[in-house]
Image 1 (cartoon, rainbow, N blue to C red):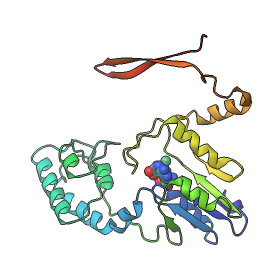
Image 2 (image 1 turned 135 degrees about the vertical axis):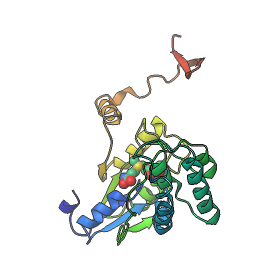
Image 3 (image 1 turned 30 degrees about the horizontal axis):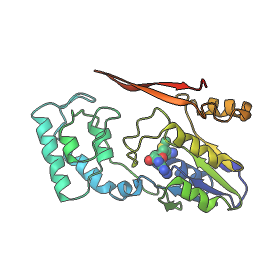
Image 4 (image 1 turned 60 degrees about the vertical axis):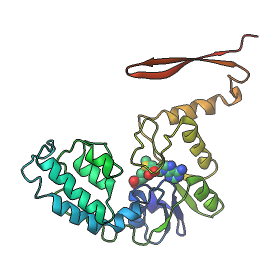
Length: 250
Ligand SMILES: C[S@@+](CC[C@H](N)C(=O)[O-])C[C@H]1O[C@@H](n2cnc3c(N)ncnc32)[C@H](O)[C@@H]1O
């Protein structure tokens, strides 16, 4: 896609995450301006990569006898926690990288307190991270995607890259504490109107199907307008939601 764009194209990666898309575009089109929205402050993790590598080097000997992906039991568990505490006391710890190397898949600790309470697994990478040259030449900004979109919406030859957090995705590694609701996903669609874009989604999301339906039923508006909402709370050991009844019978 990037290779086919005309000279002078500006790529704006509205949901930059780890910067992988920005990096890939810059590799393919070093002549083009690429703007990466580092909303999660991923660059802070990159700039501390030597420290993270050093911490992992200190952890490897402690768990050398624990099989790959196996749980780390005592006494190694306490030794790992003591080592991480030392790194935490002396400065920056990349909790996301640490979690992906020592916690169960998709589990994340965001501070020492959460980490020390977690069950540990040996998923520690064998080699150092190498981030040499990553994001070279890419412009880095950090702001809400709507603001960045407004800043570039009038720029000629702009292509927006949109890889928003997916519906039904665990967002716990993301900076935002607020889980994305359907209306948040729908808001993103406003950035697609009249623009050139690359939009990422997954088969878990029904947003494309929804947009297709809305396109075919544009006159429907909000069918619930004027209806009265009644809610009934449903609570149980593993349940917590509301049953909702909408009534427009008058
Ligand atoms: C699916 S991920 C993007 C992954 C990215 N393409 C990569 O290469 O890693 C979505 C990203 O959007 C970020 N995000 C969430 N809310 C945002 C907002 N209001 N503005 C900009 N980015 C946001 C999340 O923190 C997350 O990093």
